[in-house]
Amino acid sequence: MDTNNDGRKHGRSESVGREEGEEEEEEGEEDIYLDEFRDEIDEWVIEALKDLGLGTAKAVLNAPREVLDQADLEDSTLEHVLEVLRAEFED
Image 1 (cartoon, rainbow, N blue to C red):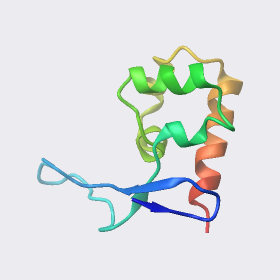
Image 2: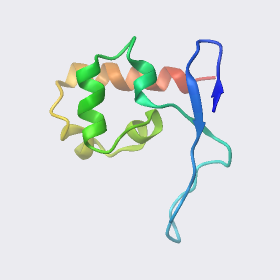
Image 3: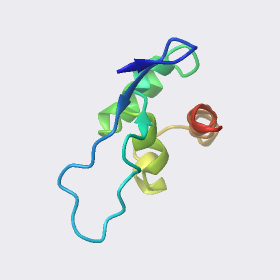
């Protein structure tokens, strides 16, 4: 894992067990564990997302809205989460 300037740990995402036709992420593309966002996202929100199996930023950003809705978060809370996560990957 690498650490960037703000101290967040970045792990490499891996594509394991992908079926033919599924999109693969770029090789070496980094992902960030949701726990690294505890200073910007409430812990209970992170836990709700992790309970759905979404433990990384990219997992949340790539999840269908129907899956995210299962976390039973208010729309404004979910939008805040998505904004924070998207901002991390902007160049």
